[in-house]
Length: 507
Image (cartoon, rainbow, N blue to C red; front, side, top):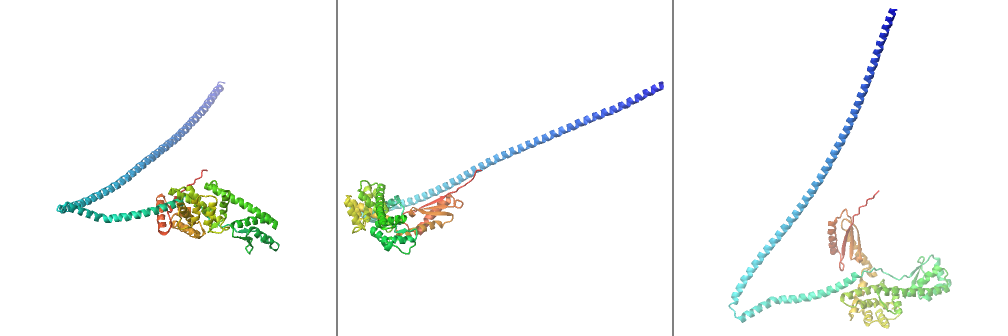
């Protein structure tokens, strides 16, 4: 019994020891795992802090580098400014040095000049001493005669030269003044010119219309010719009929009537009469309106309505291809401007200039030359004798009044202006082409325009090839070449234009 109890006791004690051992082992393992986890956590935290410190260090380093770069750029800008200031001061110093050298040279020239004057004064003094010694031996009367003789001999040639010079200067001044007056008037009044002829051709819609215009047995064309006083020429010209007539007014009536007949299509004698009368009324209205517009533009008032109609007829009159109404208007302006330059009443000169060719309005209807006819018309409408005489004398060699001389000069200027009349048109175009070609002969030119009847040349240059300084030289070189190669009246203005455009788009 005791043995069993002892055995049980020993067995329970052994089991207790064994259980305690295993429990201690497990507790020890659990503690070891906990320590290892803490160690690993500590290591991870240490690594995270290390990475954070590295990132902060990098950011700090980048910040220091950026600040260093900014400071370096600031230093560079300061150095550039200092360098620019030094260069500017050096340039100013060089300029001052050149100015000083120039002043020294001028001073030396003055010294040399003074030395020359001093030598000349000493020479004159010696000569004067010798002359005084010679004069001392003369009586008062002999000395006086000798002095007058020497003075007369010295100034004789000078007086003759001065008289001749004054005569030449007076002649040159008068000629130059007259040229200035004419040139000023021309430049102040620069009107456009186009060689004109009144139209004498009527276009047809088709060839069939020619037969309808001729009519049965030619009755339509005969009616038109009878009513208008013009001849209709129907030839091989495709889709066109030519109107031939001595009177430009009749030609215009025929053209208006024929144009309306063609548009209507009903071409017969009754309709022809109707449209011819309508054309005459329309032309009469147009003539009156034209005269009123011309008078209004020139500022004339109080003119007789019949005179206004005569003025309007000048629209349909040409001479050498130049429209007489435009020519008369231009002569009026030129006469007024030249009269202003000469201190003469410009209103009288303007009227005399405008009405100088008034006789051409009806010279095909009345016998005599247009100056005589114009004089009669102006006398009939009670114009001043000075104005009427200007119309009579504008083709005479030597008019007797100043107004007539001005009108004669203005008439010659208007007729001879570049491009005014057909006989000078080709030469005018050729001169403009030569002027543009001279400017185009230089490098760096983009385009050239001759404007204002050849009085100005505008030269557009390529900005990448010609800078501002070269533009000045180019203008001077073009002007010199024009002077050497071309012949022209007055002056030609050379304008060089340099334009650089920079285009950028904001998106």
